[in-house]
Image (cartoon, rainbow, N blue to C red; front, top):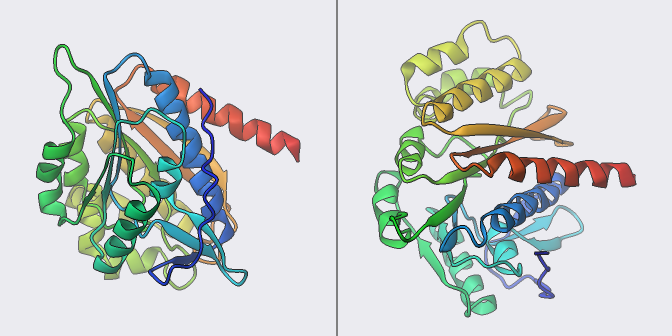
Length: 281
């Protein structure tokens, strides 16, 4: 199946739109590739496919000075011609939640979409109401995007959702530069980083002998992968070029974590697609 883009032209409607750098637009397209492959490999093998976005945002982005408006993952995903049974979008910021709700109702009334405004300690329980688990004669496949561009989502949430056999797609992106650097996170955001990784022992491993942003990033990624694998998940990484004043490293990593046998094939599809696009240039 080929995912077809919606012909919708998005314009400034007066509600919240996050201004971003050009690489974010490319990241949305990479998520699209993962989502399309996920659905294509699972279609016919399960009874329903659900997309969950833990930090959905307002639904729209704009590119810096030229103000080009483009859809974030929620609107992008609903605009695809894919057999996704349900979309569950979570957003804690009231302004962005309101904007997303208005846009979903405006552009995609025909889609089965649920919007949740929940605190992290309530989220896993609330998702139980909208994401039915697989049973003997009824199989559910869930792709869960977690892209807060920060350390907002505690690992405890990931643990609880992993128990429900969610698959996760995680772009590891967050401000990392000369001002907001590894020292800032280790000292000023100690508690948040500890919760993000899953505990004090992991935090201690992260901060030990760290002397650069690059080493901080690599070590954080290794710890996160270790903890996801501990949930009996397979891990697959893709690396993508990054030209950003906010994140001053040359590449960032996208992680796919899943118990599905098809996860390796999903990852391979994206890598091959990326290679073909690079070859065109």
